[in-house]
Image (cartoon, one colour):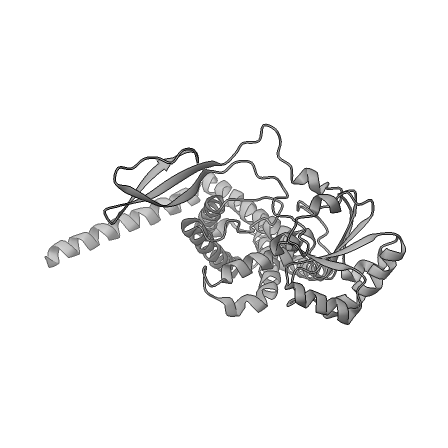
Length: 399
């Protein structure tokens, strides 16, 4: 038995030596050099692009991190209050590491950092895809939506490219001096910090969401006549002598017959997703729980104050809201508030702040998407978004 084990170890050692030998031979050829260069450009470019897209909207990325921290996902809810700081740090790190690998600066520590990041992201995307927890990883923000399995595939490709860089590390050479490369990296870091500070105190410079200026909300909620519908499978559950028996149908037509069975319940499962309009979860609910979104979208001049959560609202912004909405009402605008918070708490807030408008209930996720500010504002003319702003920019809006 011992000899057999030794023979296996010997064979494994020989195989490993062969792998190392042919790896060295390949990466000494022009093809190895080209593969390393292509991987360097691919990894560096993708990290810069991905990081910058998320740096343009760090608040949106922080919402994704909060989803991962949730109790039913990673159960790290104690990290949720710091999600925004994690988001800013990670996206700046992505950009800077991408710049450094392209410049071939400090290649060993940079490669190990890239490997650590991609292993972490690969774990998250696999977890999301396999357990169907977070349906959009936010890898490219709202610019490019990927399914969980697409995100995982992207990360596996990146992981392979980084491993190639490790194997061809001797070909990763700087073009200019180290001092110049350090200077470029430092400028990139400072630029990221200032850009991140700007979008946090205002709004994303590039708006890829469904509620960008020029959008007609009612058109964004509509379905084309030839829109593909969801393919749904229905399981009718019956009790037959104490055991559950399921009968699957493709429609909710006539109840199937099961001999000796007593109907219990019906379950539905979406087998194939159909068309989903860009705006699919937006409603405006009054105190009677009626959806008045269509009536509001007919208003000639409408200002919507967005307070997606009172628990997380910036209190300084509420004083800005008071002055701004009074000015809008004087200019002939109808003003309403939209929030997902408790209606009574909103009434108490309105009384305290002496707001001259009413709050309506709306889905919190939709409100987070409309404007990355709490509070923020959307300005509409007959359902078309003509303006949106962070509360820091309310004074710049002219009526």
